Image 1: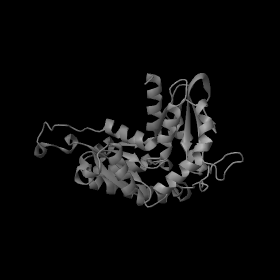
Image 2: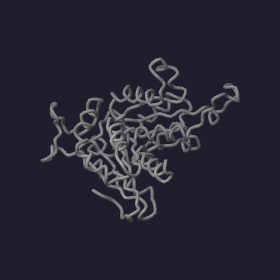
Image 3: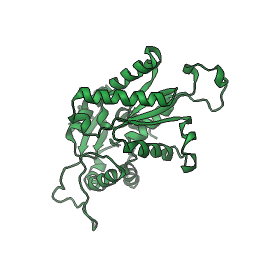
Image 4: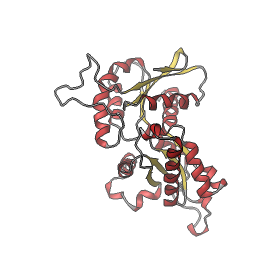
Length: 293
């Protein structure tokens, strides 16, 4: 599945959905088109995990045959989806310049694809995941003083050190993503707890899974998103950025904005940055490639 016309020099980005939901993949097309790169600048190709093994693809390699995953709802699902998808992705490496793993987790495919791309001859290739991209974007967008210049008692909310948080799907992701942020930022186990919140407000969840976001009535999903966002805002008095913690949340940023405005008021709620990991990931890949890093 491909989107947008391209010139021979277009940056070729493979968008990887490691679950079997084609509706989730299709929802990413208008989201990426909204980035509005000039015609011929970027060419997107979309990969969705096959539902069953294709003929000629060896996915077993002496181990129990991995399963296709319809909705990634745990560490185990992420690992299984990586094992299943990697043999399909390896033949595609040469034909693409950059790769975005569109699963909101520390998905094994990010490391695996980076390792495989590093071993290839030829031009540099770039890999990131939507989790990693959204965290880095949030850190760049929020304000945090290494050494406070104004005493805490004299600060207004708009001057406080800002935190970022994540709104995700099932409750299991509260712990998984909390530890993933700590690990990604190299905080280490000894810093889990109170110190985590110096930059990170935590994770709130909707109780839905990734496929529910597309299968349930839109108004029901919206209510869940608003409730989870408000809970996150109540955890920290200075949330400056909120990450959409699932690729299936494409287009739900307006529900998050509504919650911010209702909870904080028009002025403060309108200033909270809402970070979509898919858009952040593509923007990062384009920037890295254009800079030649």
